Image 1 (cartoon, rainbow, N blue to C red):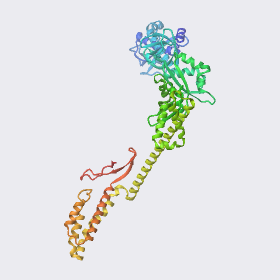
Image 2 (cartoon, one colour; image 1 turned 60 degrees about the vertical axis):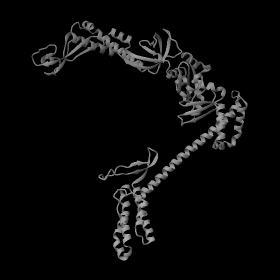
Image 3 (cartoon, rainbow, N blue to C red; image 1 turned 90 degrees about the vertical axis):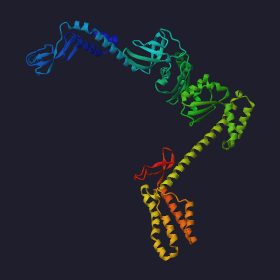
Image 4 (cartoon, rainbow, N blue to C red; image 1 turned 120 degrees about the horizontal axis):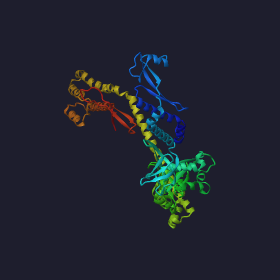
Length: 565
């Protein structure tokens, strides 16, 4: 037990884990040397270290064929009075001198189980530390990775996670961020990083107490490892300067982080809930004159800076603007003051609506145009830059107001149009009833008018024998039913031909008949229109007409409504 306790202390393993491994090894040793088919268990006294083996044997009535696996009922009841024939009973079967035999046989099993337990313990320890910073020593340098020794385990620093400007040497002390911990057959595989942006977050938490205790919050981080980083911070407690807390007295706090990251420049800017101010701060150290946000183009911000600070705002190879875009999440378009002023003056000249809105401040544009024509853009003073910025802001505000009004008008127009169309559709449906019941009322008046003339010819013939022929023939022509389910409209040419071929005794009668024909045609059109209805399609965002059709003459069922624009 002294040896077991010492082993647990050196390997930092629980005593129960080691004892369980030894018990499993003892069972394997017993089966190998003494055999056995039933369940075998091992127990180790935690005080003396004495091992005991218990074997389950089958209880038989009288004769025992296999003494290793069977026991008589009489002997079983000596151990357990409740034993019954056909059952199982656990009997201690520890062989003499079993400790030496078990030690020789179970050595490899014990070592293997201890190694597995040690690996599991290391994996659990470092899996809980994922996302933290660890201190390591450079153990081996290879072309594609660097191996760090963390004590009892090694970590891998891949080339993709190395800072490009760093050079490593064996024995060098390094801080690294634990990116991932994977479980393998050879132990935990730990991947560390020096380029992860959260490494900068952890270093700030270590160096800045205000961040660690929650007084100052890190809102976002944009990093290009080895070159430059930007950190946006905000104070959660009134009266605390977030930027000053991170920089420290004379920059001592931030300088220690810069030294740890091999001279990487770090810009700490103040976060602002107003996106325009936040973008202006993110472009620090450049001074921003104006920021105009455009959501329609995918969160694009147009930023105006003085001409002499244009290169500073863009940065080397666009680094400053690129980091500001990552920090804010907006696409940033940077313009010089002279370029933005020329565009503003052009808009004022050419756009009547903008000129009307800024008509009371035209002297600002005249003064700005005079400044731009008289001086080189790089020589503008602070007062002149303020005048130019005011002119640019006036145009930007006018454009934003026009755009807001346009959008509001479009929304109001769409809402009114949809409301009118829906009201009209509801009125039509309310006046004519459900579509399924519209068929009978639509055809009923036509049928009455068509049948009535067929019943009246005899009476008309008795009253006026001279006019019986033509009216009867006319009524027969008009009352003839159409074979198609939806009768076609009568063509004027055919009607005129029929009217010319008839004998018309009176012009007034002809006018009445023509009016009657037109009235019937109109009613047939209305009957066809009743088979359609207007509905608002939410998927298309428009009002469409739905129509029902028949598949054929043999099929009587109506199909579903089909959409028609």
